[in-house]
Image 1 (spheres, helix red, strand yellow):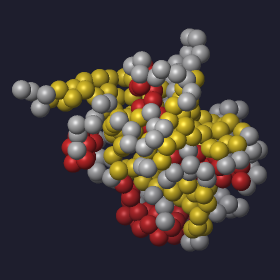
Image 2 (cartoon, rainbow, N blue to C red; image 1 turned 180 degrees about the horizontal axis):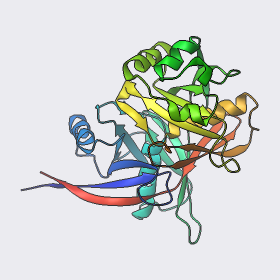
Image 3 (spheres, helix red, strand yellow; image 1 turned 90 degrees about the horizontal axis):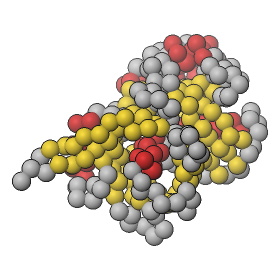
Length: 295
């Protein structure tokens, strides 16, 4: 008998179709082994494919596993998780707005679904408390990895590793033009990231397109897991906002917007709330496609 495995595509951090960051999603995936999950992620060839599973830890509502096309499993509460909750809400599988918990790579983290009449649902997800790591000392070498000159980096800010669930190297650029000009050498950047102890690189500036509603403009490169560039990266936006608070560049108890994906033609707005050690990432999105894998 031929089997059919339903799947969905969700545009995350988006207000209209074909913007934001696309996520491929497979619900009710408990019958799939890890090799099959990796093969499906390779077939879809999205930056991440998320599988919904029954939880294995107490207190969790659902368990998520996410893989890149290269077969690397990724953690952290980013677009991979937010898209899953947007689908769950649209499918009528979210019974309440609060008291929700998601299990991701051994952690159970709170989730809130916010509904307003006439508006798409918005999902807020707690990330892990921020941790700040090493400073990348070779500014000229790092700039060269990104296809830039040292003058393109912000003169008064260091590139530094930060994590709210996934460790990324936060690289401040002089301006938005420098962010847009970046053309990373994947092999060199991969080596630099491994040396720094980071997974991906979040190149950003403090002159966003929407100067009223946003605080930063960013691009994300992650050759360590086979992602050339990602249109919207919640696991990087969270650490960036936490760093800006820690350095006094934005006030604590802030909710801010970080822009990403413009160079890729997929403009994305990532909301981040920082309150001391609590970092939450939020956004809306919509289901844009559905189908079934056959066989």
